[in-house]
Length: 240
Ligand code: ADP
Ligand code: MG
Image (cartoon, rainbow, N blue to C red):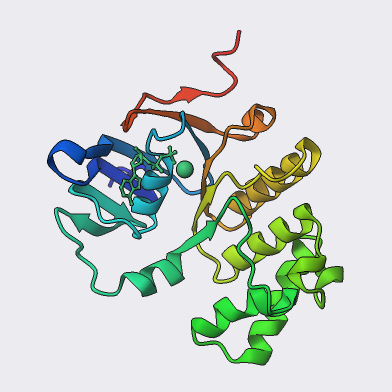
C-alpha cells in the first residue's frame, strides 16, 4: 500500500457559523476549511470581530457550527450535527484551552489549579498532584507550587494556566492570545515552550495572536477576515 499522508489532528471542511437571524444575523465563520497536522504550530490572525475566537470554540467543540464538517484526530465530530454524544469527554481527552487571561481559580493554590483537571478526569488526588508538580517543573514554575494565584507574576500565572491546559496530555492545544498579557521576552519563552510541546507530545497548537514579535515561532499563519479564512502563507519564505 502507498503510505498515506498522516491523518490531520484537526480538519474543518466548509464550516459556517452565524449568530442571530434576519436583521441581527452575524456571519462569524463562512465556509472555513482548515487542516492541521500533529507537530504544527499555527497562528490565527485577523481584526477584532473576524471570527478568531468562534473558530477556536468550534474546533474545541464548544460552539456548534451551522454547516460543514469537523474531524478531530481522525474521528468525525460534526457533520451538519454533532456526531458525538459526550462532547465534554472528548474535550477532556483531546483538547487543552489556554485563554488570554489565565482564569486560575483564586481559592486553590498553584498545584491544585492544575490537579483539579486531572481529578475531574477521574485520577485520584495524590496522583493528580504528583503529575501537576511534574508539569509545573517542566514549565519552570515548580518553585511556585504552593503559592496562591494572586501571588504570581503575569508570566508565572500564564505558565500555570498552560500547565493546567496540558494536564490531560491533550493533542490539540487551543490558545486565545496566550501571550497578550506578557512582555515580549516572556511571550517568546511561552511560545518556545508551546513549540517544544507540540514536537515532543505529537500535538498541534492553534493560537490567536496579534503579537508580531512572535510571528517567527509559527509554522503556518492563517488570516481571518469577515469570517473567511485566507489561504495560508508560509512564515519565512515569503518575506524576501
Ligand atoms: P474575534 O475573536 O476575531 O474578535 P469573534 O469570533 O469573537 O471574533 O466574533 C465574530 C463575530 O461574531 C463578531 O461579530 C461577534 O460580535 C459575533 N459573535 C461572537 N460570539 C457571539 C455570540 N455568542 N452571540 C452573538 N454574536 C456573537
Ligand atoms: Mg476573540
